[in-house]
Image (tube, rainbow, N blue to C red; front, side, top):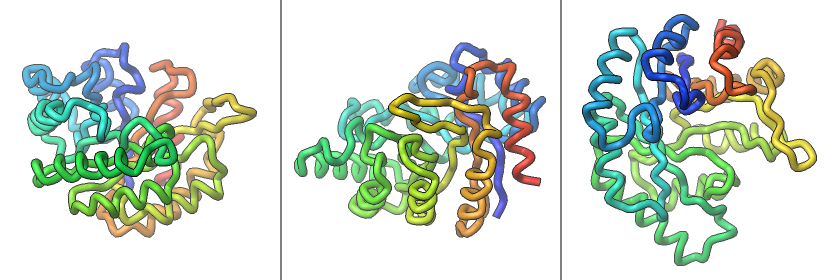
Length: 253
């Protein structure tokens, strides 16, 4: 199993696509998840063509497209423009959000509606893979509920990304990753935690030991490769990308 280092483009929304491509290439990052809000707006196929050409010329992979489609919330027709843009990029995987509520905030009827929305999307586009964003304030806030949702949807092209939950302990995050591992396609990488109710964002090296533990778990995946996508520098500065990328690459040696 091979880890492939990359970047989630929304980490630097103000930075142009050409600048981001140059920065990724200079810092040894091999893949990018282009976001559907700024860098490759969904439905703008001309923009997608331009970005695809520049990214391919730099030798950078585009395995996934980061949409903001919220299952059970977004206009159901939005998925058509999202898929169209992903296809132009050549991305076979699209990120979705598992609603905008935790499971305990939902009625059973609304949860069933979300299940049906996810099934509809997967059935309409069987050639694409749809992956949940593993995120607080959604069904994936708690890994048992995330796992149940994946099973309830039950579609072969329905999987998920993973990232540590900043509100939970290292031990809880390890348990979550082990439970969800058969479904994990890609990983978003950062070092965050909530301390006394406040989100603290640290340089990536702060949780190096934790991340090495997560990578040990990921090595048991049956996937041929897993993408490790840097998401947000602790200070949101493009100048911090070189040290952050170097830290990530050091884990893979």
